[in-house]
Image (cartoon, rainbow, N blue to C red; front, side, top):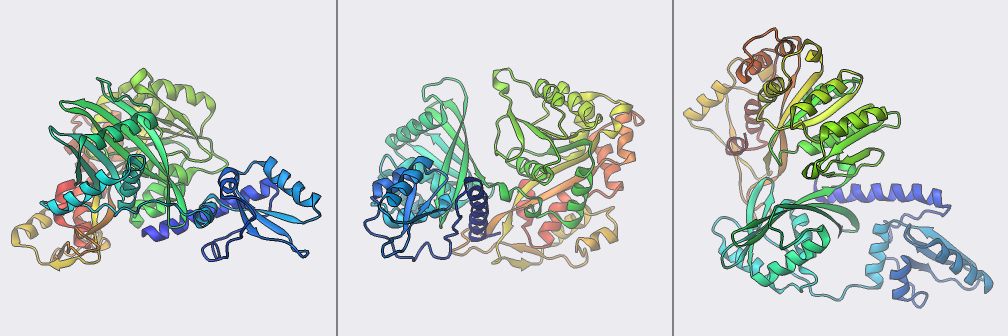
Length: 542
């Protein structure tokens, strides 16, 4: 889904919510999308100050029996609407008020009161050794006005689709880097004055101290307005003192509830069917494994969103809460100040939930509590740190011990990675003999039927390479999920029951592969053979 389509969907979702709110408030709803950019503005009916103060916009000037019309938002005080209505009725004139969305209000207020400010060039990511771009962006960042520079940086990071901003102290300057599609790219080198501005804004907005001598975590939010719509940017702030000053990493979560959707994850039919089958059951444990930044949270939240119906009670325990989702009870667990997932889980089980999400299983106490919950009628979702599904399964057994009662608790383990997706400019090529041998060896033991189902022909191997253009500077656009799914079959349950004495990652993986599981490496190679990504990207990530 491209950025324009995402923005269109966000706006449609906001308009739908505004229509519902209008019914609750007893006001007529007005969808302005078809005329908001070209309808003539109304002179001398309201001051710009009042438009800002009351979140109210004039729509039509009355007179000669015609009604005066105003557009209001959910932020407009009801007392102002009533007072304005009385003012016109006392004069014997008629007036109407229509409820519009916040995005519509922003389009109109920018037309009535366009900002008088300097336009700065967009940030461009520098390639390796591209000192000219670095110098250009550094110059812009050093010129942006002090009160705007922090917002400008966040807006530009969001525009580039960055997941992180790294602010790093060096001896003579400050380096800014952004992680886009999983790779860190240098953006600018700025002077110490700009650094002090950044850190001053961070300390006030995220409630962190610039003088702390210990690592800190904070959180902030920012409304991003772009192309006629608004979305919320959630920002997690991690700071740590270094040799030359406080380094900061800002993790950006481009929050949109409508995008937390299993349909948008790019899962194959088989993968989606397996997930749907497992989460359709009222009990069991589903584990997501992978390193930081592999998309675990997005997948877990998408599963939660799929389960989010009025007949289910869903509770989450998170450290920290990354996305706020309507209709779900989300509980923050501050583990840095003594909070515990296990204690939180024991408490919420008394609230009669149907589904529980535990942010992360970090210790045996939490693991055992989660498993006990999953065998007593709850569907439990959680994340776990391990390299693969088999390694996660082996580590889980090591934490909880073998136990016949636990054998039916774990139902699905998913390991995932995010690889950069090739743009349409990609070019096919024939790999050398060593690469062909490696690919064929990687698929040893996989049935011809499975290979055919995934479109793999080992007798005719073609790979793809990125082609850089002005619009696609690195030849990649976006990322795609590579997912390994271990369905806990009867054979796998033997490991938890203790029927198998040799419990190790290799033995579990061998049993899973015999049951039809494709490993992360195999899934990555399938994506490379389909032209979705490159062999180099699969090697880098998996």
